[in-house]
Length: 414
Image (cartoon, rainbow, N blue to C red; front, side):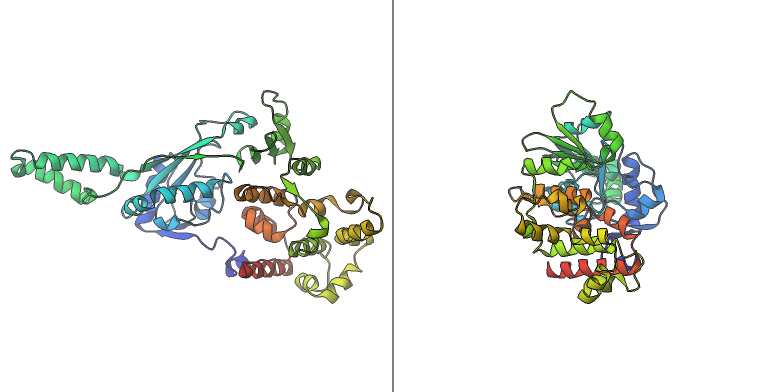
């Protein structure tokens, strides 16, 4: 991962945590029912998740109490607008945006000397079967401040009220109680230490529960798309809910999504886009494992590209050029069928969210599409970084160079 780190493409926006902040983080872990970390320094993302602690605990989602109960730790207001690198739900980043939009000023105040435990309460204590994901609706975001700061303020205000009553100002016992409270918590009179719960309403979303499930609402009928085959086979036995269910690998899924105006694809238009060139080059790279030249040079140099295109076997060559071959044949014979010429994974990778979808739905569908056919390395990096990192480890060094260069060039343009 060193090349990605040097290119600022690997978790580059994490916040370092050390010293007193480690103590506060551990207090939050214990408050949430987890064991503290033994690390003396680590880094966190926008939701308070740490890759170092995840490695220490040997579990990615160590901030979850089961799949139905996810949490967040807020240590610093600097977490505002940070990426959520390993979200359990596709809407986790939206949850954090709402939290800081609603309570930014109070969070800034509290985190000067405390930390905040956050519970994303989906009103589901535990999952029992896959279709329980349909119960997701309103998420109540609840807050708990460590060290009982809110209760300490109430008690301090009572002491102050008692101090001013009658002749209590000469009572040394009350003096000592006030001094002890001030030493421990500071002057809490004007501190804002209460965070009202917030309600977030879900619509379509992705959850990693049950091996990964896409829940598509707001369409003709609810659609569930399962990443785990065993979970899918269990779910289709349930006849209680009136929903459409697919496994992510089923070819008919793409057709159904087009029928519901969720995705679209016009190959004549797509072939003119830069995305098409990226996908074609990536598919070509899959046949270059024994190349004598660096893969990045072959993909970026037109002469080398043509040279190696003519070196691979005819079936591989047909796949790399299948879209252009289809368009050419279609101009001669309009009855030419896509499925007879274009490889499924190539065709699926060229689909995009339907233009009528709202922005948040488009992001969700992009994530779905790059999981169905992960052939566009830029969109895979944008919409599923963890899958991108997993695939990156298996690429040859010169392929990694091409991927990094491609992504960096696009990020500069955007």
